Length: 638
Ligand SMILES: Cc1cc2nc3c(=O)[nH]c(=O)nc-3n(C[C@H](O)[C@H](O)[C@H](O)COP(=O)(O)OP(=O)(O)OC[C@H]3O[C@@H](n4cnc5c(N)ncnc54)[C@H](O)[C@@H]3O)c2cc1C
Ligand SMILES: Cc1cc2nc3c(=O)[nH]c(=O)nc-3n(C[C@H](O)[C@H](O)[C@H](O)COP(=O)(O)O)c2cc1C
Ligand code: SF4
Image 1 (cartoon, rainbow, N blue to C red):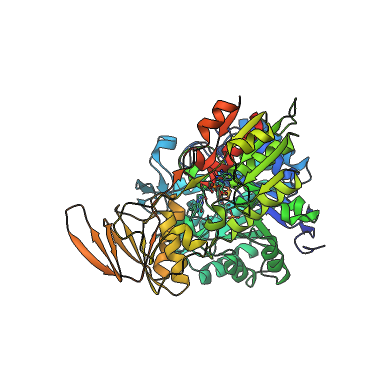
Image 2: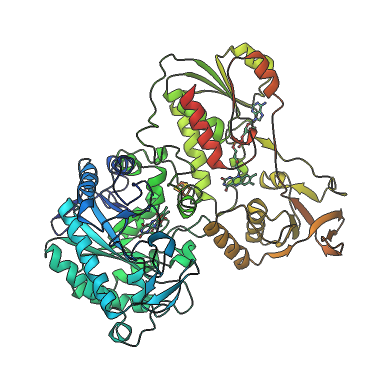
């Protein structure tokens, strides 16, 4: 077997896990408004249990009807009335052979009065990430919060969960007590910052008994000035072990700096592994590592080198619920790779929406969006082999349509071939590979190196046509743009253009910033010029924070609120809105200024065929999320 350590079973008390892959807890917002388990939520988790994970840690639940709620649409464990639904959920997971643990959480200051109609409370009075001021908890309130944890744990056990996980990470109440950043109390809970968690554990244990699995999620380090460090969390881990915790699940960061735990593509994979390793060296109980450990080889190697005992994967199992089963059956090439883009999961739930995924349109709609064979198979031509065209072709072929995919280049991939060039886009390269393999495996006929024309499509005589011809990068009307030392982002990424030592990138949206970071990694001296007042404004917050960090780390300079006016040999001229001008010396100029849809074929096709669908960037230049989702839905509806 290729991944023997990952696929090895694991025993924790009486709990036997079929392998060492754990689904990390993740807010899905798929429950009913009062935190009651819904059918959608059951379907979502059942799909992941069916996909082969050894253990599923169900998303954080709030534990009382007062201040503990962290988010709208959060799952609840606050009342006995919720036990029935939680029981159905646990059962649906266990029926597929996975074990189920429920994560229980008190928000502390990391919430808003909007959610419960009460001012948030915390160990010490200070504002939370929403900017709302939290008040200091009284000793009675501390007692009540510990009891609420114990009661929630009892409900989890009654419902049939195999264990509970205390959420002591990411800056929620338990972590707030532990951290010097948030706990400035002078009473016993301030003098011993670990006391709240330890006393809570004692009460939980009293309620669930000695044989029940109780785990603890911690931030090994908080990545914030004045926050907790590994040295202190190692010592605290030993205390938890002495008091009978069954496992430690080591994440990092706090919600204010969420890029350090929902780790975007701009930070390296295995970003938090050193923290799990550090904790593991301090204790004997099982340690779970998490944080961008999506690559099965990295997971395998981490277990082999004993850096951790178990591996939790979050977004990797949103993107592909079947990841464990694909590993088990020796088909890792079929894994649909999570891009670590946060577009569908983290970003959407932060906006109050349900969880979705850029590369998997079925997420959150597992029951309604199952792919079924078409009642009448058709002949379908798909024009364009980018992500939109490939996803449409894949789904159409799975539905037993006869599909011909035409791509004018000699290789499939569309813009992903260029988008995936920078060093930090490994996942995008892997996703591209996945799509190519699926197109092949599903039996799509591919015409590569053939430009689709109306005549060619007519020759193929399809019942339906899908136009997924993407977009092109128009040459902007800037004096000097045709000079040999200026080129488009695509010419640079395709290797057609070789830049000099000093490069100016015009356009500071995500594309321009990524190109700048890429060039800087090649040793170039890079400047980004952007008309707007900020960089990468088209990215979701956590990705943006990480990309800005990367630009800083790689020494990229920026000019904000300036536009490129003229390109000359050895320099460019910039202007601002007030009419000021300045010169900047550079050897090369890269234009990363936007795209225009390729719609030339649209009207002629509409006149000739009864069913023509336009998807992806060809409809309007956007992102992989839209390309994949539109490809999926077209594949499902034809
Ligand atoms: C540098 C760069 C980085 C990017 N990074 C990201 C990112 O990190 N995350 C993200 O979400 N999005 C990113 N994007 C955007 C993303 O790549 C696009 O949204 C996505 O590729 C659109 O997919 P598509 O299939 O609609 O079009 P494309 O990917 O453009 O594919 C269209 C295909 O159609 C082919 N074609 C066109 N005309 C014809 C014809 N007449 N006959 C046959 N074939 C034809 C083209 O050759 C091409 O292969 C990036 C884009 C760029 C340029
Ligand atoms: C949409 C989303 C919701 C999350 N909700 C929780 C949660 O309820 N409890 C928790 O401890 N961590 C939560 N996290 C963090 C994940 O459990 C995990 O630590 C993180 O995504 C890193 O793992 P990954 O790189 O494998 O995704 C969430 C992450 C995401 C993307
Ligand atoms: S939306 Fe992006 S980051 Fe989130 S699971 Fe899907 S691919 Fe991964």
